[in-house]
Amino acid sequence: MDWFTAPGYWLARLVFQRALAGVYLVAFVGAALQFRALIGAHGMLPVPRYVRYVPFRRAPSLFQLRYSDRLFACCAWTGAALAAALAAGAGDEVPLAVAMAMWAALWTLYLSIVNVGQTWYSFGWESLLLEVGFLAVFLGNARAGPPVLVLWLLRWVLFRVEFGAGLIKMRGDPCWRKLTCLYFHHETQPMAGPLSWFFHRLPKPLHRVECAANHVTQLVVPVLLFTPQPVASYAAGAVIATQLWLVLSGNFAWLNWLTITLAVPAVDFTGLAGPPPAAASRPAPVWFVVLVCAVTALVLFLSRHPVLNMISRRQVMNRSFDALHLVNTYGAFGSVGRVRMEVAVEGTADRVPREDGDWKEYGFRGKPGEPGRLPRQFAPYHLRLDWLMWFAAISPGYARDWFGPFVERLLAGDRDTLRLLRHNPFPDAPPVHVRALLYRYRFTTWRELRESGDWWHRTLVREYLPPTRLADARLSEPE
Image 1 (cartoon, rainbow, N blue to C red):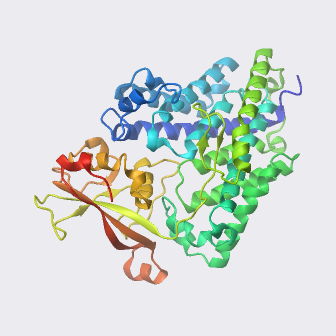
Image 2: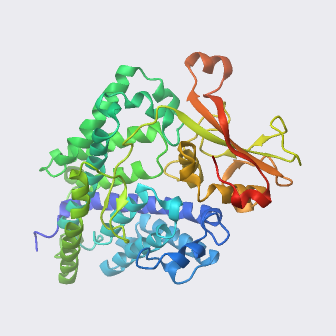
Image 3: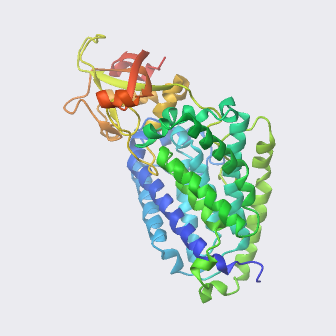
């Protein structure tokens, strides 16, 4: 069955699988370290309460059968250990069926987390990891050549990621068509990185070049992924270069790294890798051929949903069309904010809260806070609370289901919630009242940076949440 495998892509598969396992590792470690405060039994959006109202068919998960914080931690750390083993090459040291079972276990564990993660796991890169992770189950290992069908399916995913993002931009905010969106994006993106200030301060003509290059990479280059080599390799290289530029300019969890990983199987490493190992040239088992063909047919059938979405004038971003997240639609920044708003959360030990009282601000790890603090690099690690705080500043509606419980846990001095923060101004006893203020943030100018040392300038806009006591926290909503 020479048509079924492409032995020359053995190195591309090896790099792809190692990198994908690394992304899985980051995802599982992040879940293990953050879940108790977010979705744990006593978290802001508890899993037990969620599964009482959402049936298994809508959110298939191991935690629909039974949930405890100990079980969740066990699943998350098991996933991390398995991902680390695959990143180290364990999948190539076992029989083909065992390697497939290892990848399937990773996918099942992470699917179980995402499907009960609620708002905290509503990002497009969760579905992307699950879709790519599902295809990785059928990519084989060193004991069989890489299946051509799966290699093409991976290119199909990459095409939808890039082309879908390009379409949503051209149909969305006019600034993308005017090539002016990057006048604002580096400043208003969800989580700035250590170089974002410098990217924002690039000359406007260069921002226009960035914008035009983005359109080429997302609307023209993806089509070239389906052309013969070496053109497909050049197209994949262009995607990788663009994603590395995004890695430098912001913090987008593992989205950019996963997209880079997804581009690797389109690269022809034949000249670099040399002849494939003997095992990669052996005929694939019949059962493996049948299984891969069946999966290919399934993916092509399910692809009708994202295709119809892409050609629709009402294209939506980042949506799953099935509960297993097998084939999804993607996109990012259909609109770009012109102004950055941030919610600052403060507490006081005063029994009677006053506007000019002794208010102390909580420090977040990734979101802007102190004007003099340079943004840090966290990606590919995902700070879920910080990301949701960005949405909360855009509209209180995005925070309605979790912001009250968050404030309640600050007032109670909840240890797991405080671990998500960089700085707790009340180390000895929790505050009596907590409030939230809405600020407008902007990057400082070169002169302001030299004179003050501040990377941000902020201006108070209004009160976001009035002073709240523990007894009132459950009833409080941001305004």
